[in-house]
Image (cartoon, rainbow, N blue to C red; front, side, top):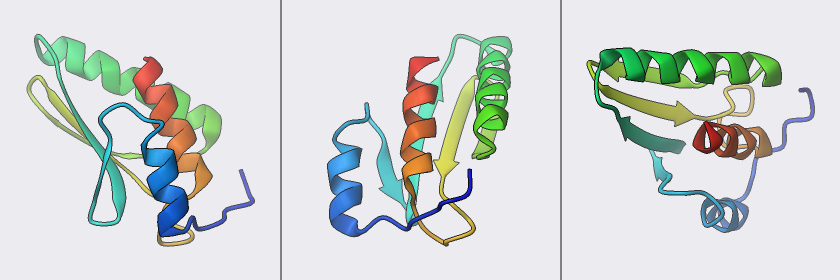
Length: 94
């Protein structure tokens, strides 16, 4: 991935409506997930890691027992790009 374009607030609002239960927190895409146990949560994180590596676009992942919180942003542009929304959709599909 190499053509990072910072999305405008209007573009972000439109793309946010295409996602399931994601929100903007601290200028980043954010979503929390809850699982039955730690093993399921960690398995989910592993799947995210594999998808992230394919896109060469890596999220901030936080895990406490059965909960996973994800933040997406494009650090190179200090904002949100198309790649954040692509990865969010892939995460939802997991």
